[in-house]
Image (tube, rainbow, N blue to C red; front, side, top):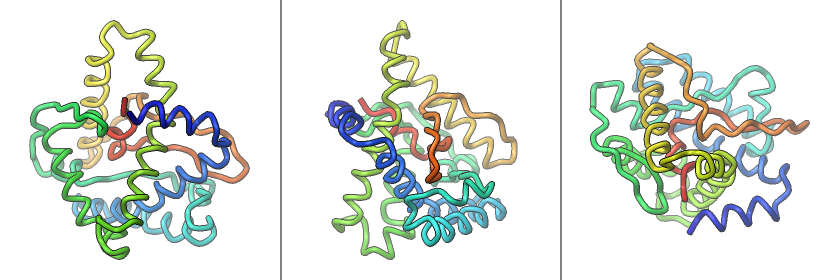
Length: 217
C-alpha cells in the first residue's frame, strides 16, 4: 500500500528534497486554483494563484521554492468539489476509497472531472501522459508522507480512527465550501503538516483539495 512507500520515502529522502518536491507539485495546481476561483466569483484568489504560479515557476525555479509565500502571498487552494459546493451541490455520502482515501460523492466527481479540465493537464497532453501520471504519483506520495505524523497520532490516540478521519475530512470540506461562499472560517488542524523551516522557501498549506490524498493508508 501507499503508507509503507511513503514512510520509506520520508526515511531516505532529505527534508529539503521533500520540500522541493512538495512545492513543485503544489505549484502545478495553481492554474486549477485560479480557474476554480473564477468560477466561484473570487477574482482576488484567482489573481493571487496566477501571480504565485508565475513567480514560483520562474524565480522559484519551476516551483521548487515557494518564493511567493515568502513575499506574503500564501496559497489559497480552490478545487472543483469546492466550486460545486459553492453552487449548492450537496456532498452526498462519505466514501473511503482504497489507495485514494476519504472523499464524498461530490468531491470524488470533482476530482475525476479535474483530471480532464485541469489547465496543466491540458497543456501537457492530457491525463494519460507519463508527465500527468508521474505528477499524480508525486502529489500523492508527498501528501501521504507529510500526513504521516498526523495519521500516526490518530492511530495511537483515537478510539475510532475511521470515525476521526471521517469527521476531520467532513469538517475540512465544509469549511472549504464556506470559504468559497464568503463565509470563511478556520480549517481544522488536520492533514495540515507544519511547514519545516527552510532558507529555500516553501512548506505546506491548508489544502482542501488535497485532503483525500493526504489521508491515504
